[in-house]
Length: 137
Length: 137
Image 1: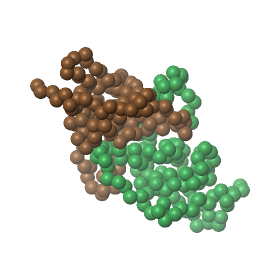
Image 2: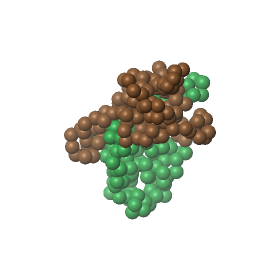
Image 3: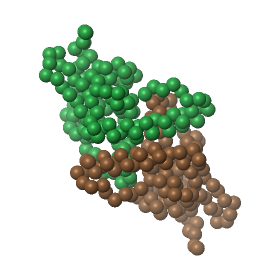
Image 4: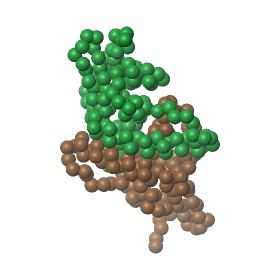
């Protein structure tokens, strides 16, 4: 199988982006706010649904999420990694191989995401006055 | 019971704020994004948890949410009303009496919010390396 080196190389991040995000003190102290801080990034739920099906290489995640830029995907993955939801596995190979995998703690998000997805689909159908649209995540 | 007229009067909103929020087309098309667009405002989960216990007057909601300004509460309630999650009941009385109540559709958010709160509390405890903090919502 031909693996494109170029597509496997992730966008370099600045120092500000690589250091663990400083979590602001919760404004409300409500647990929902903490969950929102983890899954609230625009592409995070989509990436998490893909990873719930198993570990994936970076460029597979990019192919599965064609409307997001590679840079956006990199940043969202990094935040999820900092939050302990997924791990980045770098294989000591040439060419380099990088995979992403949910941690056990990350897997505990599954029922939360399923519940949020189901409600959101009902909400969308209600707002559009239509049947549920085909699922994209 | 003495009811303060002043505290019952909500902050006037500008025209831009009162017209129904134009919902941007989903960027990802994922149902989770739709749920985030409804419950993602910082004080919305807290207000929704209070309203899950029953309908409340505006100033009762303000008392129960002392760290939010009256204006923030007004705006969050208005968005939730536009999204069909709650209704605003104005009683034709002097002094005017306004109550907020979840719609049946709004009540369907309960399991979603409970699931998000439980996960968020586990996340907070994990990040702080401590036991679960006392619940604030």
